[in-house]
Every structure is written in structure tokens, then in C-alpha cells.
Length: 161
Length: 161
DNA sequence: CGGTATCCACATGGATACTG
DNA sequence: CAGTATCCATGTGGATACCG
Image (tube, rainbow over all chains, first blue to last red; front, side, top):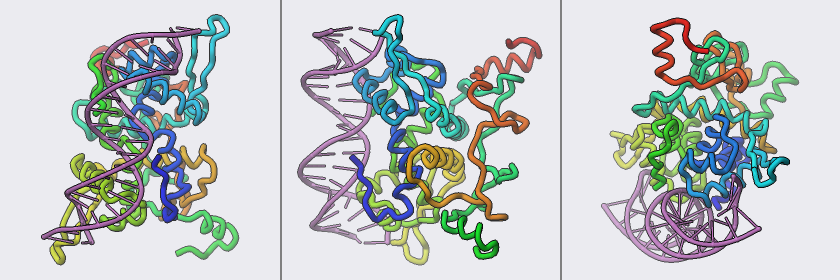
């Protein structure tokens, strides 16, 4: 499927493309969201999401292939299969929450459950980009830098524009 | 297409589903990334991304429909069309960067350009979830709270577990 | 330059029936 | 319970040719 052409230059090998290969369609994110909510079994995902069984089977398999979910059969009842988030899967939480917050903010009628800090029950901050010292950055304060420039910067401290 | 069933309960109307309706496939994110990189014209997107022209036309139209990009014809040459990010589109940056950082971290061979703070040229922090006072939170420190609970909390201060 | 039109291949999605 | 199998409709993607 969607094999990217060779002239992608800065785009090929980009983490975004890799991420989208694993997560690049609706159900993957919805399944992941359900997993974060504690769902573990095929039938749970199926009834909660209303996804077709064959599609769900395919998505779960892909998520397992990509190391986002781990599939285990229970010793007690080997017919019982558990899908659990791996560390790699859990690490998608910020991305998923960022996407969700955007939807909540810009698409109407989204007064759904909110993530709170369990310590004080207060809602979490909106996800934002921050400088190394924690300042919130907007688009104008950002630029792209190539890895080579960063290395170069390490050698001679004054080089980049 | 993918009309979600009625029994979605907590999932219908979720911002995530809305977000995915707008952005829920590879090219939308790749086009957005290109837009953040300053690309503005049909031919630029086409040659940089290597996407088929008909697909690109469809995606651009959808992004415009969803208010993520704005389409304008230049006065100087009305054949020249400019696609520019709207505020809504720009607000997708944290989600896109979070996704990209995840891909860079977990999928091999992603030593692509990095976002830096233009003030000091230092890379930005990894996107993370934070409490209202700025502490970084992990999965164990989070829970979902329904909007009604939050309202209730406003009325009687000691109620939630 | 910024698209449409067309054609084809395959992926995705839904519904349903069946299986170990 | 956790899938497979099957069928069908539509969406997505690529290639290319054409148009105003």
C-alpha cells in the first residue's frame, strides 16, 4: 500500500511517516483510546467501539505487530486473550491526548470525560510545545534544525545563522 | 463511510473521533506537516510529498472544509492559489509533533530535522502531559472524569473519591 | 498552475455466518 | 471468546491524460 516515492527527501524516514504507518487511520486511535480506558478483550473492543469483527481482528493484529499492544492468552483459560498496552503503546498517550484536546476545542459538542490529575482531581494542562526550560512556544518561536547542524553546533559553538 | 454506531456511549462526540474525522489518515498529517514547513501551493505539495494529484486535491478540499487550511487566490495572478494554515490548523502542531516524536523515538532510523526554540536553538522538550501546576504526569497518575463530576465539584467541594 | 477525469488495484468498513 | 470466512460497498491511492 501507499509506498512513498523516493523524492520525499525530508519526509522519508520522518518519524511522522513511521507513526502514521502504525496509527494512520481512525480505528487504531479509537482502539488505543479504549485500551487506555482499560479494555483488554476482543469482545470488549468490539461492543464498545462497534467496529466490524474482521476489521477489529486486523487492527489488533497490526497493533501487535507494531509492538503497541501485546497479546497474551490467560493461563487459567487459554481461550481468554488479553491485549495490553506495551511501553511503546503507552508512550502514545501524549499524542492521543493532544489530538483529543484539539477535537474537543475545535469541533463542536465535545463535552466528554476529561483527563485529571488523580492526586488533586484537577484537569491536566492543554498539551503544548515547550522550550528546554519549560516556556510554552508558539509557531513563530520554532524552527527546524537538521541533525548535522546540531552535531556541528557541538563542535564549533558559533556557526548556525 | 465509517458511521459510528449508536452504542458508542463515551466514544461518540469524543473529541478524538472528531479529530480523526478531519485528520484520520496519513496524507492529512503529511500535508499538514508540509504546510507547517511553509509549503503553500498545490504543485509544491504534490512534488514534495509525491502524492497522486487527485488524492491531493481531495485532501486539500477536505482540510479546507474542516477549516484547517484556507484557500485563497492571489490578486496578482488569480491562477495562483495559496493554501495557508488557519488558527485551527496551527493548533494541530502539538498533536503532530507529539506523533512525530513518538515515531522518532520508537521507529528506527528517524534522524530527521528536529524542532528547536529559535531563541536559543535548543531542541524543544518532548511533549508530555502535565498537571495544572506543570508536573509531568504518567499514566498511573491520571484518571478520567466526567464533565458532570467537575460541575458537581464546583458546588460541593468535597465529594469525589 | 491548479486542478479534473478516468481507470485500476487494493484497503477499509459493515453485516453476517460460522468455528474451535 | 476470539476470532475466520465471505460478500459487498465505498474509500484510498497511484498513474496518467487532459483542461482552462
